[in-house]
Image (cartoon, rainbow, N blue to C red):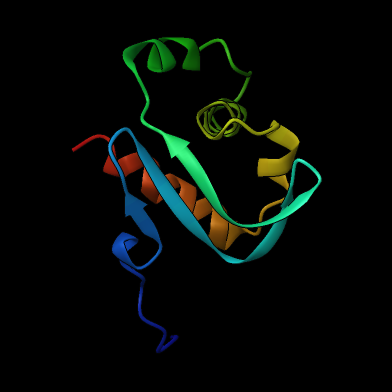
Length: 97
């Protein structure tokens, strides 16, 4: 068992009005540029409705939804380390409460 503590979203998500800035664990190439943060806009009801049209699997739908909310290509989301993908998931969850 690891002694590593689970991180709190406040450690890597900065909440703004209508968006979250997510600090990545290390710089990543997104849209051809090296970035250390990704901005996710707040989802609207239409995003949830469109979620069903975004792919054949739950994973594909979630990836496409995150790409849409972050205004990046789905392949850029797919290239993120799993640790950073989990940060996107945590950021998304913050919008639901």
